[in-house]
Amino acid sequence: MHTSGIEVQAEETRSPLGREAAVRLAAQNLVPMGIGLAVLFLLFSVANYWLLDPPARTPMFILALASSLAMLGAVLWVRRRPRTGYAHAIATYGVVIAIANSAARLWLTGDPTYSSNFGLVALAVGLFYLDLRWGVSVIMLAVATWIFAASPVVGADAYAFTVIGAA
Image (cartoon, rainbow, N blue to C red; front, side, top):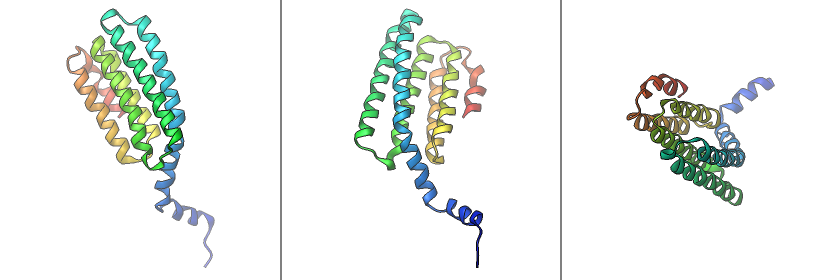
């Protein structure tokens, strides 16, 4: 019996190879993502030094610079030892660094508008993670960290809808 190409294609997407292809795609994006985050955190370190007030200036400068170096180290490690099966775990390393920077900035400055960084992290996770378990787990980590970091910040509760809505 003859089957059309559309039916065969639909059957192929239901196969376990779909998950493997998603993990392989995530692994291919690790190096560009890592380089992008390394450059971004380097720019943040310079901006933190010049734009933040003294109580938050030095810790945020050091954290952003260390984050840039950590992401660069991750990129070099991934390039030497590509591990397709660990793509989401390695990506989580970068996301945890972004969450730590967001939490530190919110907590050190006391400015509730920095809550929006957690929404951006949640959106980025939604775009990159192709595995539902990893994506939901990392977004839950971001929201839980925001709740912890925002709890002493006056006015941060007004951003709950933004953070949770992005998640």
